[in-house]
Image (tube, helix red, strand yellow):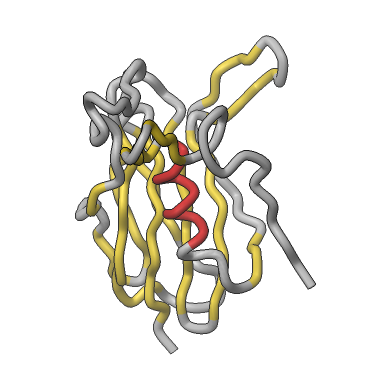
Length: 156
């Protein structure tokens, strides 16, 4: 059996905040939902090649990072562009089957200091991402400071 826990569900550090009868989704809510709706399957080990930067704590770190989950004939890919100023191209190749098409894709992208509040509850929200071109492999250009979650259909 596998489980995941979220310590604080409401207020403090949680994905939702309440104020009287009002409910506000914090930025983390959207990333959590994007991942949890694509969680089923087998985690894959991916290889990312691209530009890096030097982190004081972690040494050389890639601007691009990813996680992938194989769920039957579906491939769920989560990708982040850590670069604050530049777009990053990303190509995805599946080792044993070609990518047939994009099933759905979302992106979480906003200015660095943006945050949701009760006055601006949708300052940061996931939206549909139509930047993928899929034909055997998949290619997209990820905007600076962004997180994408995509489901691809794999060819038989």
